[in-house]
Length: 271
Picture 1 (cartoon, helix red, strand yellow):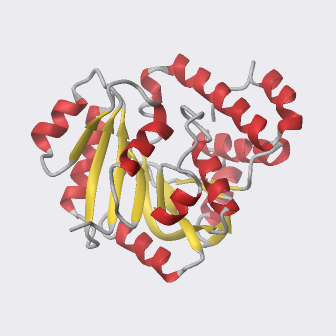
Picture 2 (cartoon, one colour):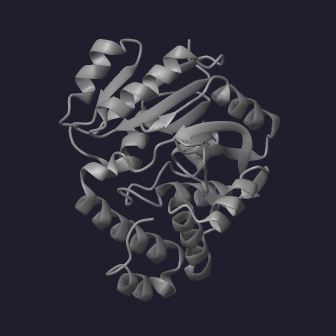
């Protein structure tokens, strides 16, 4: 019987984080019928072996190489057939009831194609996990808030805390925990595989909105996100991937500004 939901987790050299993510799902599984699919991007830390030995109920797809986030998620989406798909980072820990709350909210809103929850770090500080379509102005504001929050600036943390307590229609929600209808995902052409890492979630949401669906941020569900853990294992590759994705995004969505993006990419760093 086809499950209602497929939970897709992409893994790259984060065995212990993946273990914690899967343990949380196993300890308090969603009530909605579901399957868990892990796509391992050729991890060298034994992640695939750990999944096979410790989590036999999880479907493991070994990619055979580091495909990046978009291609790896698409691989799992194409090999599943559920009505709903949850993209979930391996450094996320889902509390009991959170996924079911997201599913209910999506099912209550027929016009909504994507819904994302409130994300908090390990200390309970909220993450700015949604935003406006990136452009020169909105991007600067988003980066200032995210960096301010990461550094513990009171003004930034207070703004993010208040902003994430209210449900709202947004341009995008982060792919760290993103619930999407399969129909909307397929209308959008799935994730654009030119993005190895970064901005693929923003682009995906833009394509879904372009297909006539709404993107919703909601605090009815809260998920712990210990961000940046996979990228920390290969910082130089992460910086390069961010520059490439940033330029690809501007060439696709703001082609007139692509030369400026190319110039700025020489000194900008990931958030």
